[in-house]
Amino acid sequence: MKIVVIGGGPGAGKTAVIEELARRGYGIVPEIARQIIQEQVQSGGAAVPWGDTRLYTQLMLSRSVESFHQQNGVSEMTFLDRGIPDVLCYARIIGLPDVREIESACRAYRYNRRVFLLPPWKEIYRTDLERKQTFAEAVQVYETMICV
Image 1 (cartoon, rainbow, N blue to C red):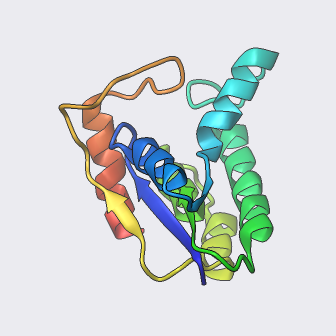
Image 2: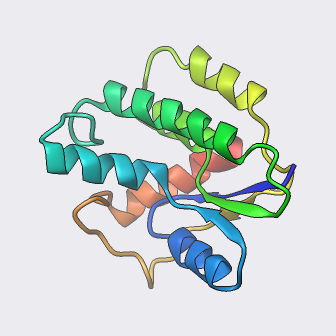
């Protein structure tokens, strides 16, 4: 499998790594969660982490599965800024009561066995319009990701 996930908590430098890989000629897939937030904010939608978290999770899962299908079978190494396991991590953090569909997707859609999980990096951590989590929450995401 030539689809490699770069995961980790918010503000760990995933996007910077993805951008550098693109600059070096690798195939990349930008972060789906941030795209959803931008679309929802622009359209006045509620599917955002500070709004309808269940709908936000559903959108992340469906878009992540769609992205997997689009990348499946690529002949060149392709790096994803997050993947389906990130959706499971988020669902667990927010306490979503039923994560069976997400767990099933994690089993069904398999990425490369090598995953890059970036740890929190306080010196570069910044919030913005889409990233509102505190650094402590970023640490919690990372620690939850290790268990996924």
